[in-house]
Structure formats: C-alpha cells, structure tokens
Length: 94
Image (tube, rainbow, N blue to C red; front, side, top):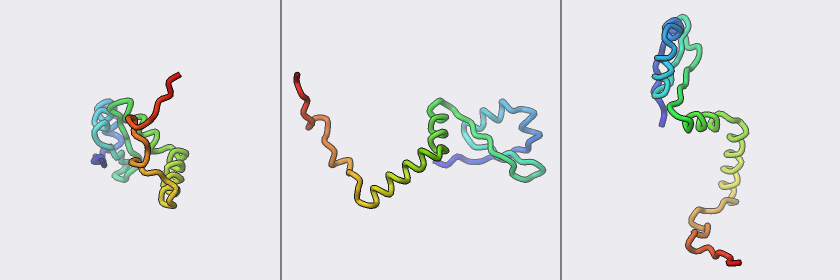
C-alpha cells in the first residue's frame, strides 16, 4: 500500500517535531525548504514497520530478491504447490 504524502515547511516541522513524527506513522511527510521539497519524514507505527523499511531499503536484500526473480524467470524456481506439504512429509522415528 502506498502511503499518502503531506507537505510541511521545515520551520513548522521544527516547532512541533513530535506531532509530525506521529503523523508520519500514517503518511510520509515531505519537508519543504523555501517551498521546495528538501526531505521526507517517515514514521514507524511498530517494530515490524521499522524492520520492513530496513529490508525495503537494503541494497543487499534488493539484489538478493532480483537474483531470485531472475532465477525464477529463467525456469529455475520451484512452485509452492510442488513442495511437499507437512502432512505428506515422512518423519523419521528414531
């Protein structure tokens, strides 16, 4: 889901940063300087949101995803339905 973006002047943001951090949990805040975009404030409502953000912006992770997609498109992937289900797997009894 793409978050909406709200524009806020840097001077306004500096006056009430905690308010805008709370707002940024729901929507990205574009920080403007002299009316021009200067940065983005991204808030996290939970630890999971923070973890997701880290993954989405980690070049190593993104390269790994790209390699996996290339392998899949090259016919090297395995379909989920081709994996053995838990009930069909044999367990070894010792």
